[in-house]
Length: 338
Image 1 (tube, rainbow, N blue to C red):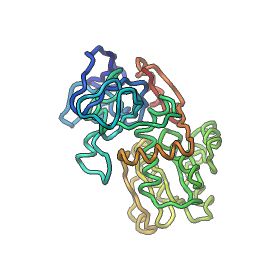
Image 2: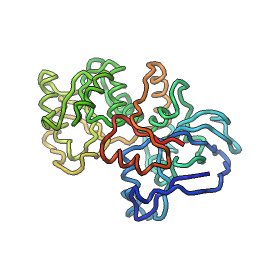
Image 3: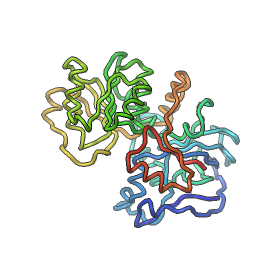
Image 4: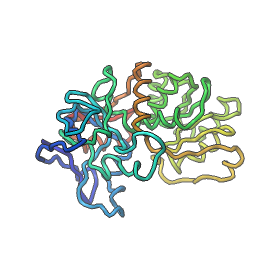
């Protein structure tokens, strides 16, 4: 079978398709024939060596955490799934329920655990989950990280009510899932982008208020104006240091800012005075548990939400897919197929 490998000195040009022996499942393991994987910003950082440097782990990694596949064989003791079941991989293989712990958060696919970027891959039965039948393989592959991150931020961590104002930064995978979930839940949505074309696509998905931050970087003022000076109830903060100052200006008193990304890079940091003055909550979050994933899948099925797959590449063209992600060309998710 074929698998993807990335080796030092890292970079998209170091991604190679290699031949490996077909693996055999051991106790509690399932062998999955992968159908599709999706890209996350984390994967871009990972193939560029950001996770391996200083970790004490060198050599080769198999990338990707988010995938859809069909169970081809099971090892002794497997009861959660059976041969023929279609499953999604789970980002954290050891986080089934409850609060996050160091042990649970040290079990992410792609790094340190070999990822889903192979035609056949082994997973713990605890690290996979059955998925809604109405979704395509490509759509299922978008769920484990981006969708679950948006779900947890909106419904597990924040305390929102219908009619509350939710700000989504940009039109990448997490933000578009956040838009779809927020729209289904009856929240008022405010989305930012540097592209009027992408904003038009967001409007078609239910966005109530649109803002081009390239033509007007001060989007916090627009949020304040939209909410009658009150501010947003919830902000999906994907930019990190480059955008947090705008989020702090846009959030209402006692509002919730979910810190989930750093795509805007360096910039002005957190102003403690702003936090104190508006009693806002900043919460970092990294994906979620299997229990959260299964709750999300029930909601997806109830509302028949269709994940947005914008670009599809064969897995042999992974380097081109990463180039598209690095260029910010996508709206929603980029997927590789096997």
